Length: 138
Image 1 (tube, rainbow, N blue to C red):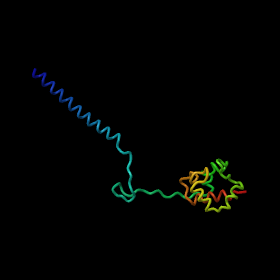
Image 2: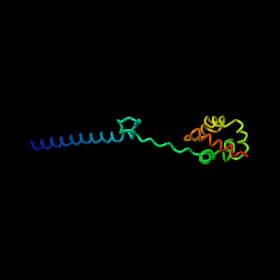
Image 3: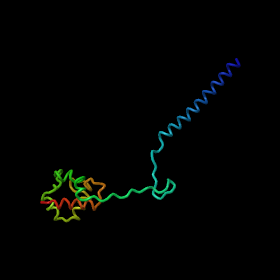
Image 4: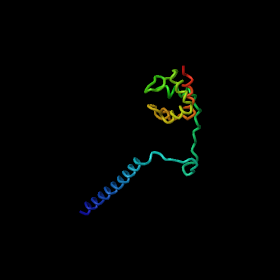
């Protein structure tokens, strides 16, 4: 009987240790699954690995480049009432002046959303694109 009791105690101890190890493994697995995927480091904060590399600003695009890649989607076809490139519609708008047209482009006008959805365009690039479209007027 003593052997059976010893065997049962040993078996119970083994099961308890196994459950404890399993619980620790589960806790570690859960912690791994819910850990943050990244971190934020503010430039100049040495506690997160030193100064972060800052990307060099991209070279400014020409008005023609901005028109071709951003504006032409609507202004080439006149979609949603956009003044068509190469038409007298731009001569009419030119009477408002470039600064008024730039303000309309930045803030949006009628069906055109703010910045014409060119969120990566600088004000100068937008101004150059407007000038490019005005220069196309017939």
